[in-house]
Image: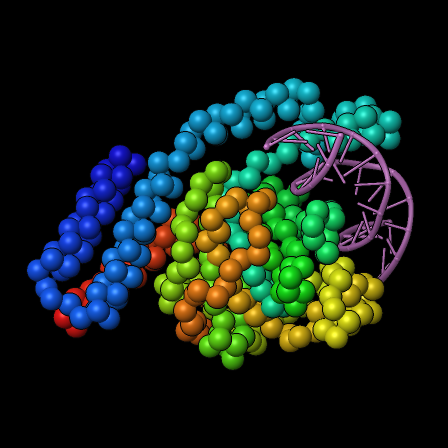
Length: 325
DNA sequence: GCAATTTGACCAGC
DNA sequence: GCTGGTCAAATTGC
């Protein structure tokens, strides 16, 4: 870890020097200077981002979680395993109600989509909650394989008050389950990408990962790019209160579902500047256009993988700029 | 009958 | 005390 940090610090410093060098030694036109500013900022920001993640006080937080977990286990024996051996009756079950470990906001991925479709995983709804200052309830999902494979992935889906045709999806935790029946990837309609904006957010505890929209081309193979043929209506069971003009009634579940299109049109994936609980809707107006790509599995990619891509892309951009000078 | 969803209650964190 | 996340009994659908 220390080596990584050292290398990143050096890379950051080098990027800074390159920027200074170009700025001072070369007579740039205003537009070139602007481009240089943009790319150098992005490059430096990438280093800052990675460093901030690596330097996050994870160990301390993990320790705290561990302590709380132990306390929880003492007071509330593991519910999934002890359901049958703690006295067994409804009375005991009721007494244990609410005895759980509430998750602290860990790393989360925030998406803003036009439609709700399959993201390649099976989810089971476990709650719905009205949220203050919002017109629509927030739906809570956990991985279907939570019990059989102890998969800890969670997902929240909420229709955006200001723009009811869109939904904010928050993914928390990573899938540890193996589900051969599900194809990975989030689906996006190529046809809409031209005018779409992407924001991607990986949040850590109290940690701002980035403050600025990123180029979606950074994620040429991201799960947010896919073709439209893989779409499956995953969310039919979700009771969402869409505007009358854009909704229909699902005969299967009785739920109201969005009818805009069968695709999952991700319009923004954000780097919010505030924690999940505080941030408003993700601003998509600043992001550049999106290039379409094909669907692939990115289940294996974690936050650092994306950041590597991000960093590499910024270097490539800077490289291209230098070539043109 | 089983699995998934609904929904009121409970509790942690702020 | 309020808000949001989770639990679990009840309900619904296949």
